[in-house]
Length: 613
Image (cartoon, rainbow, N blue to C red; front, side, top):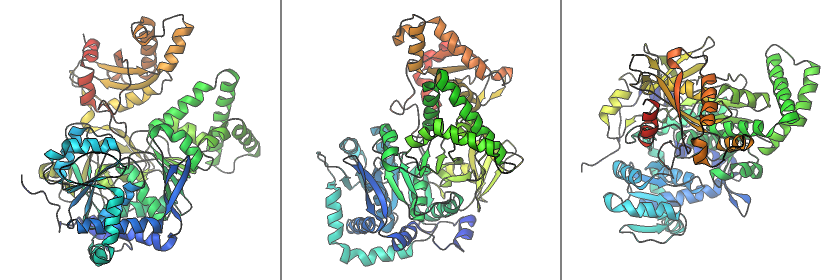
């Protein structure tokens, strides 16, 4: 197998070189060290211990980062060597990230939900020499594939676990103690490597979650992340007083840039115990900043409206109307006194309870990874939350556009960040150029040439437009357009968003590529459907429900209502009702809950064929 190497002296992208010529802080170690010098005694990384969040300070984390870097140097890792990280969100994740770059190495994060096949592929493709495994289950998967990873030399278990390895198997604590013993010997070499880092040095291989085929490793440089984070800090007004609740996968660049922004600002980050504990973690941590994908906001929105029936429902609708009127009035001047009084009452009766359930201190929700439904976004704004939607990709480190905090516009992904260029190609594709655009795909020169033009423009694969005030609107994925047999092109995402707005429908996937009409796979909100069935005197068992014509009629009526504003050829003509949700475990969703259409087509081939039979 040919040696896989990271470019040592790449052809520096012009946009990155221009940014670097004036930037005060240009590499990730510089970002971290600046905050240690400013706020070393303040809390940085926290996790729940016995039901209470315990934080390590910036200075305490720096000690461990230096020890980890010296351990890697002693193990023989050279600048550019890869350190893989197979872990859930926890303090050891950013410590691994920072320790690797302090040794001049390249961090390769991997989603904690990867199956063994994808894990082995990334370890082999990246040529990682060291891999960290967080839990006993992660370690089990690593040990199952290590024999097929010839360049892998060391395995590190973060949590205590049993297992035998043909490689050197370390515990996390052993590795830190090993690094501490080598600190005096290798500290000067670590400092030399840190001082020698350049903004165009690759700091991470981030493998795209891959809605089709094998993932590709995007080569992201220090300057990519630092330019993006340094621009976002003032844009979102981040300070050392901010506290973030982290529950999206750190292996995804959306959550990762949030970690860099908080580090840049000197803020604190608390890690959710799991995705299932987010509700209680919000109460325990009382964060000020919460990045999320739209699914969290959709669930909160649905829960609030499902629980508000009768008089409570009337009060809720009144409160939402008051919030909307206040927002509209604020656009033209001071809010009238009478409306302010109503707003205070709406907060006391309705909105205050929602704020309390999020900890009472959230100053901003950030939404990314997928489109945010308009009704959901407007509900949060009407409830007095700041909810800001942005847009970007792995290859752009990641943020290209974001809504201004003071002027968010629901239905758009905001304005282009300073220093970044975005334009719309003749076919509607969004192109981007800037200091945050990747170097290319690791060992994929053909894919790199397809994605990156010689003058630095990156093809996002997304289709969009700018509105009259320069807010970007995403309309679809270029490669996900359905081409009907009559030649008509149908964008599935807008249809799916409208269908999922129904209180009866949990998930929807539009199908029809190569067919003569549009169909849809739908997953109902089974808890609500079961209540409906009981009221109708119908069996509530799932198998019986799926065979009930009245259920299909109910859901199809909801789909038809959602499609009423679309052209006739875009409207869904038939549906299939699925007996379960699409999941990451089944490979049908990416970690940011994007649909893997190829996998869904395979798993539900019978249901799709029934639509067109």
